[in-house]
Length: 316
Ligand code: CP
Ligand code: NVA
Image (tube, rainbow, N blue to C red; front, side, top):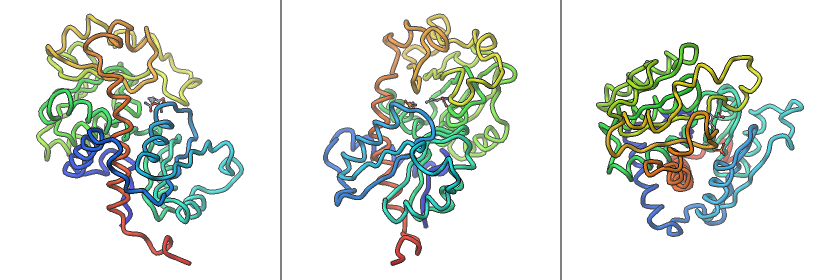
């Protein structure tokens, strides 16, 4: 069976905990794990911009003893008719896993459908599950665990980060509160799925519009840009409705004492978060960014080891 990671809920609660534990061990012994020695290659494809994802996969694959193939897809045939299915069938003959950052979730689903090696979502319009593994690793480091902690995400509740906080937070047994303005509220299908997961993990899910209610007593305050990649020209006012959701000192003061602040970066300083908070003592943002590296090394190791090669990969 091929194990893909297209959404946060592609890992069960037990599997998510296994990956996070492995990530912690890999962080503590950074060069001690080399399961891709050979080297086996991993393709990392970008339809959208990136700094952290690009570099952390590149460095991480090398640290695992593997060979990273970082590909900007403008240089491929994707734009002139080669299907993702065909590309997946070809790449599966070369590499141990394929990582893709793209637009619609239908695109990564098509890639996975043609692949006989694991496919990893490095951000789509719908989800950013690798980011959430890093976020949860950070929560685990700061609080000793994730279960029972309150996580409040404020801002664009309709975006990929909101969806991933809902699914991954519920999987981790957290109480996830998501607050955004009217017109930018959480996807009800994702909320229902997160609530279903939370029943089994002891977590919970709340959908709110009031940022103060969301952050009250929370252990983790998270936010993200108000304009995600691809939304620059969508014709919506992506500033005024979000102003009350800025993560600033006043909002943070309503969180639990010892609360931490997360932001996946890149930040738009002075918009969704202030300098004072991002650079302040409660910010865990740069640990969070570092943890992309460790979490993705663990994820790739887990998926590659859990995958039984499909016949296409074994064909002459
Ligand atoms: N957080 C994140 O995914 O950053 P990049 O867009 O720079 O990869
Ligand atoms: N929601 C943002 C996350 C960037 C890492 C985007 O999709 O652009």
